[in-house]
Length: 217
Image (cartoon, rainbow, N blue to C red; front, side, top):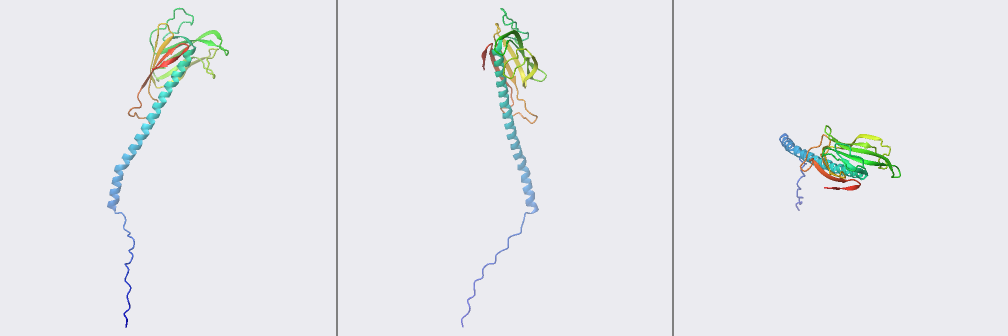
């Protein structure tokens, strides 16, 4: 009689463990998270501040370039510069420019639509409001085509640039050139934080010559 061959017994599959996190393990995980989350958030805030600081610093450079271009265009129409007093007439034999000051005055000859002198002059004034750190312009209106209003319609205290902490003008003896030094700081919302290398004042020196383009240092 042959004994039946018994099949080998296979191991029974084990049911998956139902073991979860213990309270101690959960508390340890929370403690570790509490250490790293502030560090991560601080890094994110630092990156945002750096980006914002860089953005406003670039905007400051653009504003200074815009002011330089505006002064350039005004100087091309000017015949004489001055500071604390209105410049003498363009035909004056011995103009007086006055001393260095925080104001720039330009006497310009007004032209009609055909670029013919109207026979009248006007004075353009640039000055800094020390209370608000704003650079302001007063003088004949600038028309949509970029020309000065030949009727000499006044446009006083027009805002040119904010954040101007310094504005100095030094004319030469014959009043046909002047050196303008502008110091400005970035104008930013309250969330702006000074970052290394940004948020610092910028000084721009512009040399103006009547009827010509300026040189910039």
